[in-house]
Length: 349
Image (cartoon, rainbow, N blue to C red; front, side, top):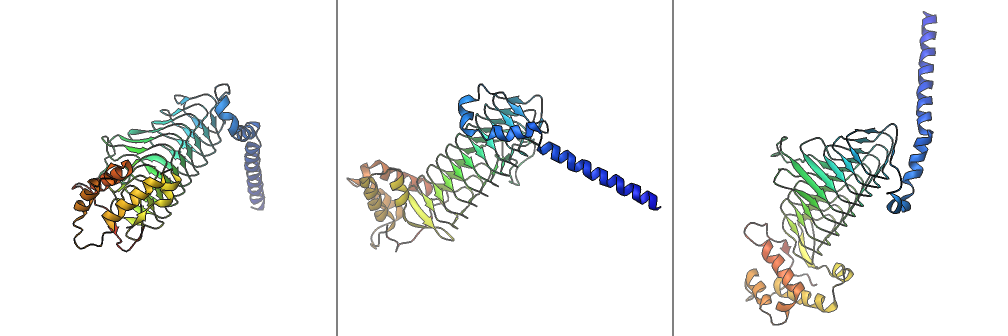
């Protein structure tokens, strides 16, 4: 009995030592070391991808039918599906995965743990120069209860987006819809963009921004951390959403909102200045905003009447930025929309 126990203990010791040896050997394998030195040369990837051979680590599971561009680096324990297409210079860090019908443009980076695409019907198409952060989940099945598993669903992402760690972006809920992300957006950690959202260009979503289904965001929108947006809302260009805001209605162009039930707080003056709006444009926008949202006259009329008054103003009615803001407000108060956020009459822009 003691002899059998000693034999078993010896076997376990040998097995554990073999495991340690195997892991140690993998970590110090020349190809493993080459992978990290290879992906660290970021400055050279864009200029030399056409001359560099692709590198696939021996522990990666890459289907032979996958289309792999030139200068691609696929690290340890990654997986690439049979229907995947990786553009030139893409870099997959250890433990990242490309599933289903997924296309990555040139020079995309998937950090450790990132998951792009899934095996449900439909596809995920991502442009060039995009970075997908640690453990982000992009292009998977939506969470809409009306979704049918047999429906083809789609996600399209443009170029030059920085999608940070733990972010989730879902495909559309139906084959006739699309979830669309534009170009040059910064989507910070732990954000969520639900099915059928339409995101424009050059937006900044701070950490934990949550967009429900069918939300539309135009260009140069900035959200503070912890912002939550109700489904079907529209966020106009150059608007700013204060941190922790809960939006249940639209935000017109150029304005700033904040609050647990977000209210208009004036123009986004800092954002407009940073984006190159002239002093004259900002002055005209402030005048128009006051006439529409800060009229304390008992005879001022309804919101539509105040909008019409500004449209007919001999000076303001001819300013393109003012007309764009007026049209944004009109669109939001249309019958099929959710209306605009509440107005704080005491606020001064």
